[in-house]
Image (cartoon, rainbow, N blue to C red; front, side, top):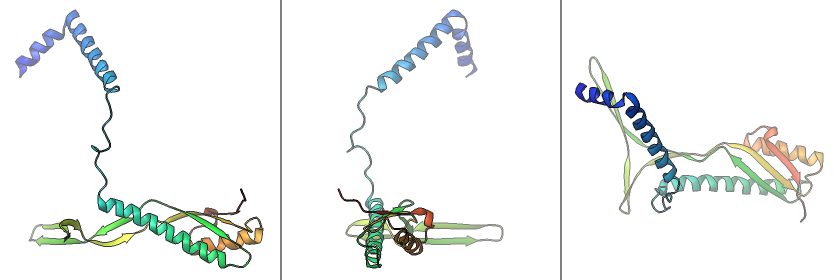
Length: 180
């Protein structure tokens, strides 16, 4: 090993060593430049999201849509509001909690804990058993309604939405629907 290092040191000394370093540096920059012109990977080569990831994303969208629909129906029934439309913003996506099988071994001097997911088979597919789905928190809401330009309506809608969704009044916007 030391013989190889000695030979490298000898080659790097003097003018030849500097030329070698410059040539290697220029070669590296040329390779970087050429890589910019290479075609990107096709979408089919990229890893597609798993069915469970799609289901989690879909469940968050369904959760948001259900909240919007229920809140729209509720607000439309309030006196003085008129027709209402609601949009809700969530903090992220749903999270699934999986069932775990835990084994522990205890001895006099140590303890070991080993956990693994519980796997279920359905239609030839294997997947982890979901015990709970946690939906994302609501972080804001916009309500557009027929009488949204009246202060009393804005206050009533803001209080109702804030109470139902458990968000501060500053995270609720109430406005009048416009005609196009």
